[in-house]
Length: 281
Image (cartoon, rainbow, N blue to C red):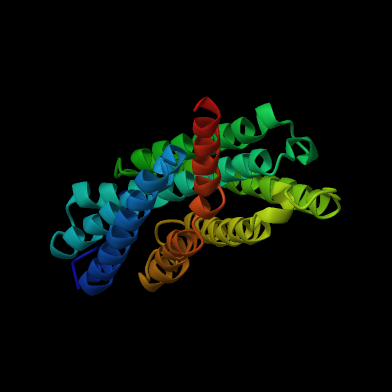
């Protein structure tokens, strides 16, 4: 095991263990492969709003590259900062993609009026909250790398605030999505060619709930982790990171690839383009 002293309470301990190389490589490969698959889908269906999701998945892969480097250099600050910041803030980009997907679903179903928040504010409200959480967490992680008692305490507090903002935003989002879901179910379209009848929208809302739930559980885990502090039980045991962060975020990336929004949004975009092209000829 690397020599990480617990006796000096005035400095931030990078690792209380030797970072596991095999686990890091495993998640590097999986996140990289899934990121490539998502990128192919994005380009194929011209779903450019999905770029945030792909960046988030890429950040996960690079974050675990940082942990792989730390296996060989556990006392070097650079790789630690790399993995610490990227793995902390990447889920915020997944969240932004989920928010934008719901906004587009309301449009595709022609049910914007059923959303509890007006269409022009629906996506903006949650994305702005997510961006705020992203920068607050990134700032906190950067401050914690100052390797002093003051920077450690301040950085942890800022990260906790960022995570709390993320959880609050997600909680409100789930409520909004559920209200919209119930209202659409109660709708009587009146004709069989209405999008509510034709499109598999419920499957995609369920995927949104699944992804949101995984990110919420991960965010609660991170709050507990940082609340316990640098010398807490979670920080001293690497397995928690892989179970409650790596695995859950890999699940988010995988579930959105298995049930990709292109089935609902990409196909609709292409159909609209073909329809507009036929009208011009």
